Image (tube, rainbow, N blue to C red; front, top):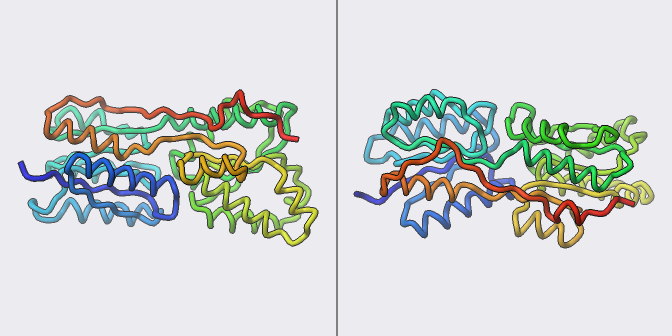
Length: 301
């Protein structure tokens, strides 16, 4: 059999977790002797769908043996998935519960499955972190991902399930990137409502946006206001070792949530299925965890 070729489609190259996804794919492919091509969709679902269709519709010798992708939008492109499967291309969906997987697996000759962190559990951990830091209640500024993104929706649902009732939320919508959060918070700070908002904690749905928010507060010209904002806890998510975990150690973030990259796991599963004829589950999960452990978090002063 010729050397396996995989296409990995990721959301953006301006997010530390997505870059960690790319590193995991490259490292795992190298170890397993697989050729891998990585594409970024610039946080645009149309761009991503176009990239995937182009890869599927080339002449058969140039097609990938499998596609591993993390969807930008709400859906996991069921029509494109069906086109890929009919072309004999394996299909692995990252960080989504794609409802069509069970149906398509029934008659598929190629592997089709999902690999995901439990995003609701991620949100639940965030809610518990907030409760540990604000035992007497309070208000948080919550910076979410795009409203149509299922990861953002599930993390928000988990947060609502575990945060104490005496913690109130002001929500802003970002684009998963540091710069989007910096601009978003800078604009929010110009509103009269923000000046009166008794925010006790900043929570972002990923580490990049948490740091972006922190940078916006660092740019406040009034020294007293700036110092007040910089004293409150900043919480993120993803926990990439070189960024999120490092920021916790240095004190830039109070806590994060480690969500391991799963591109490497998906590639390993595809190799097992294609070369070793191993039967795969419809969905596999990675383990998420609070950094530091929730019991080690101390109430914010």
